[in-house]
Image 1 (cartoon, rainbow, N blue to C red):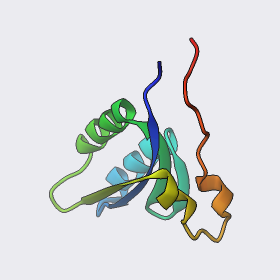
Image 2: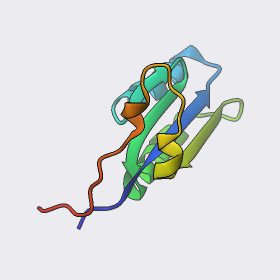
Image 3: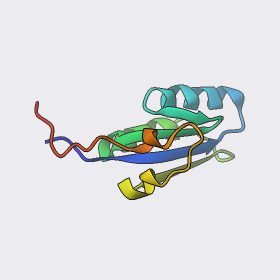
Length: 97
């Protein structure tokens, strides 16, 4: 059975353009780019831990990272000028391998 996934809002402020580009590339591989330094990602607990580990290798003391886990009802109440339907996750109860 697969791990439960949740929407996460990921925001970062990275001072160095090279580190910013590295973080952008990592996040682009696991989420959707919403604004300059804001992504959304539908991740399991394991994938989120992996993402945080990869980002921690890039970030330095002057940088900041904010990850907010959204429950399904919170994700449905997102006001997004590009469309709220993007925030409605798949209603997966189980996965077959």
